[in-house]
Length: 294
Ligand SMILES: [Zn+2]
Image (cartoon, rainbow, N blue to C red; front, side, top):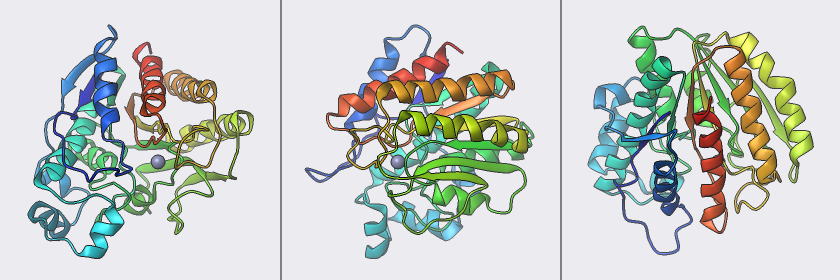
């Protein structure tokens, strides 16, 4: 499986910041030790590609670092030129993984899944919406018609829902923690909000009930799987309580449903805020390992 990394393009964060920047390097190093995975460096998305999903004045203001203080607070990351380079490469990784998945059946971005990015603004650690850009780029190239987004990050993908609202060519399915950000929701096509503390059994039953509906209703040419590690019971931000075993079962349910339906899949790792960081890394590598053997 080809996987795309961008972690060497790092950026400054203040000491003690809660964004787990270090996990990306550890995931990449872990992936490099797995014979079934080939790690490649992601190229940056071009401005033309970003404009497929974002407003020109937003992209220009991000490039220039001319961002209102309110918007910096909503983003939760301090602006730097390196931050923007990294954000473009994270989108590039999903675009490259899309091409690879359409050829090979499966591929991954060792990051991405920045689902809180809206066409006109970034928030919640998300600058550009990699999945929406990649869907638009693949549609424009004639490589796909319909896409399915399976978003199993604990947070609701409000930016993705907003960007794809009313678009019959893209279908969003998600299972969210009801007690988690964002508190002002943007409805998706099919979603379930689970109460705080929901464990493996109830979560997996919901996934097995809804995922076949999502595939049947969307008839996708490609699926983007946001395999967030943050539904984990010891995640600092996530309010759900899945075990590592439950998360592995989640990945297996998604993998086998998509393979049975012969749908190519792009895996994006999305969020994960466990302490120690190695818990998130282990969950991410388990997810990748599942799909690498597909
Ligand atoms: Zn998340």
